[in-house]
Image 1 (cartoon, rainbow, N blue to C red):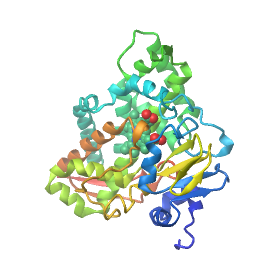
Image 2: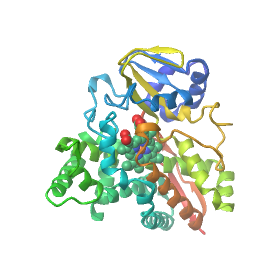
Image 3: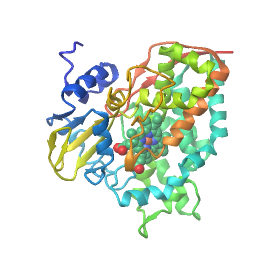
Image 4: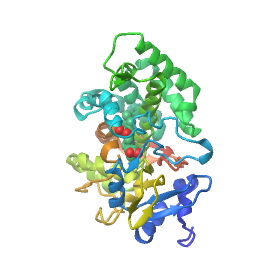
Length: 394
Ligand code: HEM
Protein backbone atom coordinates (compact mmCIF):
# COMPACT_ATOMS: atom_id res chain seq x y z
CA UNK A 1 0.00 0.00 0.00
CA UNK A 2 1.54 3.36 -1.01
CA UNK A 3 1.52 6.46 1.15
CA UNK A 4 -0.97 8.09 -1.27
CA UNK A 5 -3.54 5.33 -0.76
CA UNK A 6 -3.25 5.50 3.02
CA UNK A 7 -6.45 7.45 3.64
CA UNK A 8 -8.02 8.07 7.06
CA UNK A 9 -11.14 6.16 5.93
CA UNK A 10 -9.05 2.99 6.31
CA UNK A 11 -9.33 3.37 10.08
CA UNK A 12 -12.85 1.94 9.79
CA UNK A 13 -11.48 -1.28 8.27
CA UNK A 14 -10.62 -4.27 10.51
CA UNK A 15 -8.39 -5.63 7.71
CA UNK A 16 -6.34 -2.44 7.73
CA UNK A 17 -5.83 -2.67 11.49
CA UNK A 18 -4.78 -6.32 11.10
CA UNK A 19 -2.37 -5.97 8.19
CA UNK A 20 -2.01 -2.35 7.05
CA UNK A 21 0.60 0.25 7.92
CA UNK A 22 -1.45 1.97 10.62
CA UNK A 23 1.47 3.79 12.16
CA UNK A 24 2.40 5.40 8.87
CA UNK A 25 -1.15 6.70 8.44
CA UNK A 26 -1.35 7.92 12.04
CA UNK A 27 2.01 9.68 11.73
CA UNK A 28 0.59 11.63 8.77
CA UNK A 29 -2.67 12.37 10.57
CA UNK A 30 -0.85 13.64 13.68
CA UNK A 31 1.10 15.99 11.45
CA UNK A 32 -1.55 17.19 8.97
CA UNK A 33 -5.04 16.43 10.29
CA UNK A 34 -4.88 15.65 14.02
CA UNK A 35 -8.63 16.02 14.53
CA UNK A 36 -10.30 14.62 11.42
CA UNK A 37 -14.00 14.17 10.53
CA UNK A 38 -15.17 10.85 9.05
CA UNK A 39 -18.61 11.25 7.45
CA UNK A 40 -21.25 8.61 8.29
CA UNK A 41 -20.99 5.34 6.35
CA UNK A 42 -21.47 1.86 7.80
CA UNK A 43 -20.20 3.43 11.00
CA UNK A 44 -21.81 6.64 12.24
CA UNK A 45 -19.85 9.86 11.60
CA UNK A 46 -16.96 10.45 14.01
CA UNK A 47 -13.90 12.59 14.69
CA UNK A 48 -10.49 10.87 14.75
CA UNK A 49 -8.12 12.18 17.43
CA UNK A 50 -4.52 11.06 16.97
CA UNK A 51 -2.29 13.36 19.08
CA UNK A 52 -1.26 12.47 22.63
CA UNK A 53 -2.18 15.85 24.19
CA UNK A 54 -5.63 15.86 22.58
CA UNK A 55 -6.27 12.29 23.75
CA UNK A 56 -5.32 13.25 27.32
CA UNK A 57 -7.51 16.38 27.13
CA UNK A 58 -10.56 14.29 26.17
CA UNK A 59 -9.88 11.62 28.81
CA UNK A 60 -9.44 14.38 31.39
CA UNK A 61 -12.85 15.99 30.86
CA UNK A 62 -15.69 13.47 31.35
CA UNK A 63 -18.23 16.29 31.79
CA UNK A 64 -17.68 17.43 28.20
CA UNK A 65 -16.87 14.02 26.73
CA UNK A 66 -19.43 11.46 27.85
CA UNK A 67 -19.03 7.66 27.93
CA UNK A 68 -22.75 6.94 28.37
CA UNK A 69 -23.51 6.50 24.65
CA UNK A 70 -20.78 3.90 24.21
CA UNK A 71 -16.98 3.84 24.22
CA UNK A 72 -16.46 1.76 21.08
CA UNK A 73 -17.47 2.48 17.49
CA UNK A 74 -20.23 0.15 16.32
CA UNK A 75 -22.21 0.01 13.09
CA UNK A 76 -25.19 2.40 13.18
CA UNK A 77 -27.43 -0.58 12.30
CA UNK A 78 -26.75 -2.13 15.74
CA UNK A 79 -28.19 0.86 17.59
CA UNK A 80 -26.99 1.96 21.01
CA UNK A 81 -24.75 -0.14 23.23
CA UNK A 82 -26.96 -2.00 25.77
CA UNK A 83 -24.47 -1.14 28.52
CA UNK A 84 -25.01 2.63 28.07
CA UNK A 85 -25.48 4.29 31.48
CA UNK A 86 -25.32 0.89 33.21
CA UNK A 87 -21.80 -0.56 33.08
CA UNK A 88 -18.67 0.80 34.65
CA UNK A 89 -17.16 1.75 31.32
CA UNK A 90 -20.33 3.37 30.01
CA UNK A 91 -21.40 5.53 32.96
CA UNK A 92 -20.64 9.19 33.59
CA UNK A 93 -19.82 10.93 36.87
CA UNK A 94 -21.11 11.16 39.53
CA UNK A 95 -22.75 7.71 39.20
CA UNK A 96 -19.60 6.24 37.64
CA UNK A 97 -17.45 6.77 40.72
CA UNK A 98 -20.06 5.25 43.02
CA UNK A 99 -20.40 2.19 40.80
CA UNK A 100 -16.63 1.82 40.52
CA UNK A 101 -16.17 2.09 44.29
CA UNK A 102 -18.29 -1.06 44.78
CA UNK A 103 -15.44 -3.19 43.40
CA UNK A 104 -12.38 -0.90 43.19
CA UNK A 105 -10.73 -2.36 46.31
CA UNK A 106 -10.56 -5.79 44.66
CA UNK A 107 -8.50 -4.33 41.79
CA UNK A 108 -6.11 -1.96 43.55
CA UNK A 109 -2.37 -2.61 43.61
CA UNK A 110 -2.41 -4.13 47.11
CA UNK A 111 -5.28 -6.56 46.43
CA UNK A 112 -3.76 -7.60 43.15
CA UNK A 113 -0.28 -8.09 44.69
CA UNK A 114 -1.78 -10.72 46.98
CA UNK A 115 -2.35 -12.80 43.84
CA UNK A 116 1.31 -12.70 42.82
CA UNK A 117 2.11 -16.26 43.95
CA UNK A 118 -0.92 -17.75 42.19
CA UNK A 119 -0.16 -15.87 38.98
CA UNK A 120 3.47 -16.94 38.99
CA UNK A 121 2.41 -20.59 39.49
CA UNK A 122 -0.12 -20.29 36.69
CA UNK A 123 2.43 -18.73 34.33
CA UNK A 124 4.94 -21.46 35.25
CA UNK A 125 2.40 -24.21 34.52
CA UNK A 126 1.51 -22.69 31.13
CA UNK A 127 5.15 -22.24 30.08
CA UNK A 128 6.17 -25.72 31.32
CA UNK A 129 3.28 -27.32 29.41
CA UNK A 130 4.35 -25.44 26.29
CA UNK A 131 7.94 -26.68 26.65
CA UNK A 132 6.79 -30.27 27.13
CA UNK A 133 4.58 -30.14 24.05
CA UNK A 134 7.42 -28.72 21.95
CA UNK A 135 5.35 -25.84 20.58
CA UNK A 136 2.22 -23.91 21.53
CA UNK A 137 -0.06 -21.10 20.48
CA UNK A 138 1.30 -18.50 22.89
CA UNK A 139 -1.69 -16.20 22.28
CA UNK A 140 -4.25 -18.77 23.45
CA UNK A 141 -2.42 -21.44 25.46
CA UNK A 142 -0.49 -18.96 27.60
CA UNK A 143 -1.69 -15.33 27.32
CA UNK A 144 -5.48 -15.60 26.92
CA UNK A 145 -5.79 -18.47 29.42
CA UNK A 146 -3.70 -16.62 32.01
CA UNK A 147 -5.79 -13.49 31.62
CA UNK A 148 -9.18 -15.25 31.72
CA UNK A 149 -8.31 -17.40 34.73
CA UNK A 150 -7.16 -14.27 36.61
CA UNK A 151 -10.48 -12.45 36.15
CA UNK A 152 -12.37 -15.69 36.95
CA UNK A 153 -10.48 -15.84 40.25
CA UNK A 154 -11.23 -12.20 41.13
CA UNK A 155 -14.89 -12.65 40.21
CA UNK A 156 -15.01 -15.63 42.59
CA UNK A 157 -15.83 -18.34 40.03
CA UNK A 158 -14.97 -21.94 41.01
CA UNK A 159 -11.61 -23.05 39.59
CA UNK A 160 -13.30 -25.98 37.81
CA UNK A 161 -15.19 -23.45 35.63
CA UNK A 162 -12.16 -21.48 34.38
CA UNK A 163 -11.59 -23.63 31.27
CA UNK A 164 -15.26 -23.38 30.22
CA UNK A 165 -15.22 -19.59 30.67
CA UNK A 166 -12.02 -19.46 28.60
CA UNK A 167 -13.64 -21.58 25.84
CA UNK A 168 -16.83 -19.50 25.69
CA UNK A 169 -15.01 -16.17 25.65
CA UNK A 170 -12.60 -17.50 23.02
CA UNK A 171 -15.51 -18.60 20.82
CA UNK A 172 -17.25 -15.23 21.23
CA UNK A 173 -14.08 -13.14 20.62
CA UNK A 174 -13.23 -15.26 17.57
CA UNK A 175 -16.71 -14.69 16.12
CA UNK A 176 -16.39 -10.96 17.02
CA UNK A 177 -19.56 -11.26 19.09
CA UNK A 178 -20.24 -9.21 22.18
CA UNK A 179 -20.40 -11.53 25.18
CA UNK A 180 -23.92 -10.18 25.81
CA UNK A 181 -25.09 -11.94 22.64
CA UNK A 182 -23.32 -15.21 23.40
CA UNK A 183 -25.74 -17.47 25.22
CA UNK A 184 -23.42 -19.98 26.95
CA UNK A 185 -21.54 -17.25 28.80
CA UNK A 186 -24.65 -15.19 29.58
CA UNK A 187 -26.37 -18.32 30.99
CA UNK A 188 -23.30 -18.91 33.12
CA UNK A 189 -23.39 -15.28 34.35
CA UNK A 190 -27.10 -15.62 35.20
CA UNK A 191 -26.40 -18.76 37.29
CA UNK A 192 -23.50 -17.03 39.02
CA UNK A 193 -25.61 -13.96 39.82
CA UNK A 194 -28.53 -16.05 41.15
CA UNK A 195 -26.18 -18.12 43.29
CA UNK A 196 -24.59 -15.00 44.82
CA UNK A 197 -27.94 -13.30 45.35
CA UNK A 198 -29.19 -16.37 47.22
CA UNK A 199 -26.43 -16.27 49.85
CA UNK A 200 -25.03 -13.68 52.29
CA UNK A 201 -22.76 -11.10 50.55
CA UNK A 202 -19.32 -12.46 49.65
CA UNK A 203 -16.31 -10.21 49.06
CA UNK A 204 -15.48 -11.46 45.57
CA UNK A 205 -16.46 -9.23 42.65
CA UNK A 206 -19.50 -11.37 41.68
CA UNK A 207 -20.80 -11.08 45.26
CA UNK A 208 -20.03 -7.36 45.56
CA UNK A 209 -21.95 -6.62 42.35
CA UNK A 210 -24.84 -9.01 43.08
CA UNK A 211 -25.45 -7.22 46.40
CA UNK A 212 -24.31 -3.79 45.20
CA UNK A 213 -26.33 -0.58 45.46
CA UNK A 214 -25.76 2.97 44.25
CA UNK A 215 -27.34 5.77 46.33
CA UNK A 216 -29.28 3.11 48.25
CA UNK A 217 -30.83 1.57 45.12
CA UNK A 218 -29.74 -2.03 44.44
CA UNK A 219 -28.28 -2.71 41.00
CA UNK A 220 -30.86 -4.31 38.69
CA UNK A 221 -30.21 -7.85 37.43
CA UNK A 222 -29.47 -6.39 34.00
CA UNK A 223 -26.89 -4.02 35.48
CA UNK A 224 -25.21 -6.85 37.39
CA UNK A 225 -24.99 -9.05 34.29
CA UNK A 226 -23.77 -6.24 32.04
CA UNK A 227 -21.02 -5.44 34.54
CA UNK A 228 -19.97 -9.12 34.73
CA UNK A 229 -19.75 -8.95 30.95
CA UNK A 230 -17.82 -5.66 31.01
CA UNK A 231 -15.18 -7.09 33.37
CA UNK A 232 -14.73 -10.47 31.68
CA UNK A 233 -14.87 -9.01 28.15
CA UNK A 234 -12.26 -6.36 28.96
CA UNK A 235 -9.66 -9.03 29.72
CA UNK A 236 -9.29 -9.78 26.01
CA UNK A 237 -6.95 -6.80 26.12
CA UNK A 238 -4.68 -8.35 28.73
CA UNK A 239 -4.21 -11.52 26.68
CA UNK A 240 -3.56 -9.54 23.50
CA UNK A 241 -0.99 -7.29 25.14
CA UNK A 242 0.93 -10.29 26.54
CA UNK A 243 0.91 -11.95 23.09
CA UNK A 244 1.98 -8.71 21.36
CA UNK A 245 4.70 -8.34 23.98
CA UNK A 246 6.00 -11.84 23.22
CA UNK A 247 6.00 -11.07 19.49
CA UNK A 248 7.85 -7.78 20.08
CA UNK A 249 10.52 -9.62 22.08
CA UNK A 250 10.90 -12.17 19.27
CA UNK A 251 11.25 -9.34 16.76
CA UNK A 252 13.79 -7.49 18.94
CA UNK A 253 16.19 -10.19 20.22
CA UNK A 254 18.61 -7.48 21.43
CA UNK A 255 15.96 -6.26 23.90
CA UNK A 256 15.25 -9.81 25.11
CA UNK A 257 18.99 -10.26 25.69
CA UNK A 258 19.10 -6.94 27.53
CA UNK A 259 16.36 -8.14 29.88
CA UNK A 260 18.15 -11.45 30.42
CA UNK A 261 21.24 -9.57 31.48
CA UNK A 262 19.46 -7.09 33.75
CA UNK A 263 16.17 -8.05 35.39
CA UNK A 264 15.99 -4.68 37.10
CA UNK A 265 14.57 -3.58 33.76
CA UNK A 266 11.36 -5.58 34.29
CA UNK A 267 9.27 -2.61 35.60
CA UNK A 268 10.20 -0.36 32.66
CA UNK A 269 9.86 -3.35 30.29
CA UNK A 270 6.26 -3.84 31.43
CA UNK A 271 5.39 -0.21 30.62
CA UNK A 272 7.12 -0.40 27.24
CA UNK A 273 5.32 -3.64 26.37
CA UNK A 274 2.00 -1.97 27.24
CA UNK A 275 2.84 1.12 25.18
CA UNK A 276 4.10 -0.92 22.24
CA UNK A 277 1.13 -3.31 22.24
CA UNK A 278 -1.57 -0.65 22.81
CA UNK A 279 -3.98 -3.55 22.45
CA UNK A 280 -7.03 -1.30 23.05
CA UNK A 281 -7.12 0.42 19.67
CA UNK A 282 -9.60 3.13 20.48
CA UNK A 283 -11.84 4.74 23.11
CA UNK A 284 -14.87 6.73 22.04
CA UNK A 285 -16.68 9.64 23.71
CA UNK A 286 -19.72 11.76 22.79
CA UNK A 287 -19.59 15.53 23.30
CA UNK A 288 -22.13 17.01 25.71
CA UNK A 289 -21.82 20.49 24.16
CA UNK A 290 -19.94 22.32 21.39
CA UNK A 291 -16.21 22.11 21.83
CA UNK A 292 -12.96 23.11 20.14
CA UNK A 293 -10.31 20.39 19.97
CA UNK A 294 -7.06 20.61 18.05
CA UNK A 295 -8.40 23.75 16.32
CA UNK A 296 -11.55 21.97 15.06
CA UNK A 297 -15.08 22.97 16.13
CA UNK A 298 -16.91 19.91 17.31
CA UNK A 299 -20.71 20.02 17.63
CA UNK A 300 -22.71 18.77 20.62
CA UNK A 301 -23.53 15.07 20.28
CA UNK A 302 -20.59 14.28 17.97
CA UNK A 303 -18.59 11.11 18.46
CA UNK A 304 -14.89 11.54 19.19
CA UNK A 305 -12.59 8.55 18.70
CA UNK A 306 -9.21 8.44 20.47
CA UNK A 307 -6.67 6.25 18.64
CA UNK A 308 -4.47 5.03 21.49
CA UNK A 309 -1.65 3.35 19.53
CA UNK A 310 -1.24 6.68 17.70
CA UNK A 311 -1.08 8.71 20.92
CA UNK A 312 1.48 6.21 22.23
CA UNK A 313 3.75 6.85 19.24
CA UNK A 314 3.33 10.64 19.28
CA UNK A 315 6.77 12.13 18.70
CA UNK A 316 5.92 15.14 20.90
CA UNK A 317 5.33 12.87 23.93
CA UNK A 318 7.87 10.06 23.41
CA UNK A 319 11.43 10.59 22.19
CA UNK A 320 12.13 8.23 19.27
CA UNK A 321 8.62 6.73 19.59
CA UNK A 322 9.09 3.94 17.03
CA UNK A 323 11.99 2.46 18.98
CA UNK A 324 11.12 -0.50 21.21
CA UNK A 325 13.17 0.27 24.31
CA UNK A 326 12.68 -1.81 27.45
CA UNK A 327 14.59 0.79 29.45
CA UNK A 328 12.38 3.71 28.35
CA UNK A 329 11.97 6.32 31.10
CA UNK A 330 9.02 8.70 31.76
CA UNK A 331 6.79 6.39 29.78
CA UNK A 332 3.38 8.02 30.43
CA UNK A 333 1.54 5.98 27.83
CA UNK A 334 -2.26 5.89 27.52
CA UNK A 335 -2.53 2.17 26.71
CA UNK A 336 -4.74 1.74 29.80
CA UNK A 337 -6.72 4.95 29.21
CA UNK A 338 -6.49 7.86 31.67
CA UNK A 339 -8.63 9.98 33.97
CA UNK A 340 -11.99 9.00 35.43
CA UNK A 341 -12.26 5.81 33.35
CA UNK A 342 -8.61 4.71 33.55
CA UNK A 343 -8.51 0.93 33.32
CA UNK A 344 -9.61 -0.73 36.54
CA UNK A 345 -7.59 -3.80 35.49
CA UNK A 346 -4.34 -1.84 35.08
CA UNK A 347 -2.59 -3.32 38.13
CA UNK A 348 -3.73 -6.76 37.08
CA UNK A 349 -2.41 -6.31 33.54
CA UNK A 350 0.96 -5.20 34.95
CA UNK A 351 1.10 -8.05 37.43
CA UNK A 352 0.37 -10.62 34.72
CA UNK A 353 3.24 -9.33 32.61
CA UNK A 354 5.34 -9.20 35.78
CA UNK A 355 4.60 -12.90 36.41
CA UNK A 356 5.15 -14.03 32.84
CA UNK A 357 8.46 -12.28 32.08
CA UNK A 358 10.55 -13.78 34.95
CA UNK A 359 8.97 -17.17 34.30
CA UNK A 360 10.09 -17.04 30.66
CA UNK A 361 13.53 -15.76 31.66
CA UNK A 362 13.91 -18.60 34.21
CA UNK A 363 12.65 -21.45 32.05
CA UNK A 364 13.35 -20.66 28.41
CA UNK A 365 16.76 -20.99 26.80
CA UNK A 366 15.36 -19.88 23.50
CA UNK A 367 11.98 -18.95 22.04
CA UNK A 368 11.27 -18.94 18.32
CA UNK A 369 8.32 -18.46 15.99
CA UNK A 370 6.89 -21.79 14.88
CA UNK A 371 4.38 -20.71 12.21
CA UNK A 372 2.45 -17.77 10.78
CA UNK A 373 1.18 -15.09 13.17
CA UNK A 374 -2.56 -14.51 12.65
CA UNK A 375 -3.67 -11.04 13.82
CA UNK A 376 -7.16 -10.29 15.18
CA UNK A 377 -9.31 -8.42 12.66
CA UNK A 378 -10.90 -5.63 14.64
CA UNK A 379 -11.03 -1.86 14.96
CA UNK A 380 -11.37 -2.14 18.75
CA UNK A 381 -8.48 -4.38 19.79
CA UNK A 382 -5.26 -5.48 18.17
CA UNK A 383 -2.63 -8.17 18.60
CA UNK A 384 -2.06 -11.77 17.57
CA UNK A 385 -5.09 -14.10 17.67
CA UNK A 386 -2.61 -16.93 17.08
CA UNK A 387 1.08 -16.86 17.88
CA UNK A 388 2.73 -20.25 17.32
CA UNK A 389 6.04 -20.47 19.19
CA UNK A 390 8.54 -23.08 20.22
CA UNK A 391 9.97 -22.65 23.71
CA UNK A 392 13.22 -24.51 24.39
CA UNK A 393 14.01 -25.34 28.03
CA UNK A 394 17.21 -24.16 29.66
C1 HEM B 1 -3.14 -4.70 28.99
C2 HEM B 1 -4.40 -4.96 29.25
C3 HEM B 1 -5.48 -3.91 29.22
C4 HEM B 1 -5.60 -2.82 28.41
C5 HEM B 1 -4.66 -2.39 27.28
C6 HEM B 1 -6.79 -2.12 28.82
C7 HEM B 1 -7.23 -0.94 28.29
C8 HEM B 1 -8.24 -0.16 28.82
C9 HEM B 1 -8.57 1.16 28.39
C10 HEM B 1 -7.91 1.91 27.26
C11 HEM B 1 -9.60 1.60 29.15
C12 HEM B 1 -10.28 2.97 29.05
C13 HEM B 1 -11.53 2.81 28.23
C14 HEM B 1 -12.24 4.13 28.11
O1 HEM B 1 -12.00 5.04 28.91
O2 HEM B 1 -13.08 4.27 27.18
C15 HEM B 1 -9.93 0.53 30.06
C16 HEM B 1 -10.95 0.57 30.97
C17 HEM B 1 -11.38 -0.53 31.63
N1 HEM B 1 -10.74 -1.75 31.71
FE1 HEM B 1 -9.02 -2.26 30.86
N2 HEM B 1 -7.40 -2.83 29.82
C18 HEM B 1 -6.61 -3.92 30.10
C19 HEM B 1 -6.85 -4.88 31.06
C20 HEM B 1 -8.00 -4.96 31.75
C21 HEM B 1 -8.32 -6.04 32.65
C22 HEM B 1 -7.41 -7.22 33.00
C23 HEM B 1 -9.55 -5.79 33.11
C24 HEM B 1 -10.27 -6.67 34.07
C25 HEM B 1 -10.99 -6.29 34.98
C26 HEM B 1 -10.00 -4.52 32.55
C27 HEM B 1 -11.22 -3.91 32.79
C28 HEM B 1 -11.52 -2.60 32.44
C29 HEM B 1 -12.73 -1.92 32.84
C30 HEM B 1 -13.89 -2.48 33.63
C31 HEM B 1 -12.63 -0.60 32.33
C32 HEM B 1 -13.63 0.54 32.53
C33 HEM B 1 -13.21 1.26 33.80
C34 HEM B 1 -14.12 2.40 34.13
O3 HEM B 1 -14.86 2.84 33.25
O4 HEM B 1 -14.10 2.85 35.27
N3 HEM B 1 -9.03 -4.06 31.73
N4 HEM B 1 -9.08 -0.53 29.84
